[in-house]
Image 1 (cartoon, rainbow, N blue to C red):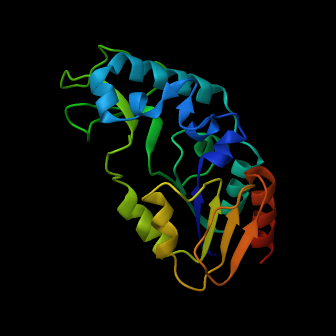
Image 2 (tube, helix red, strand yellow):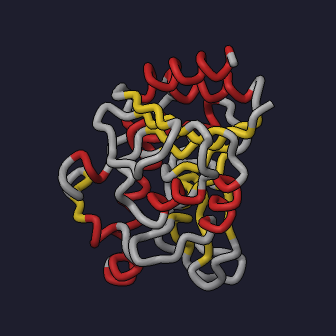
Length: 228
């Protein structure tokens, strides 16, 4: 059994109909990222930010895993598979993956604005002004906004350090600190990069570049890994 770590980005979710900021140069349905994905934006107009994430949550509820997500579930039947995702949707979990670490937070969770450790599962898609935590403080999306620290980064680094195989799928490798995770992978291990627009990856031995969407590219990679 191999220890396989998957770094997934927006590209794998896009194939399931989840729109991304990069779809239109930093805009999402006409919203500027600085207005809806920063602490400053939330302080300035919390109602706008909550509505923005309500729309994203509603969209994600209808989205279904694609062949790329399902291929990773098959891989888990033979190997230890840890998914480190930049995505805030729950498509990996919907597909059946059991070890998913969300670097940038989770869309279907909320947390206290007073005490960040108070995190709550959401059963529906709507979070409104006046929805409070047990301390009486307003709830906010459990999302790592631009300008905020990435609490899960240390755990992600440890996972990558122990990998026997690294798969990078659907990411531009331009968003830090997540983009730097590849530097922690042991030298000499196989690294598979799956994306129609292949990102620039530091020179490594045993680098496999698959210029395909996640659905078809991951299916091929998983087939190869299941055979070996």
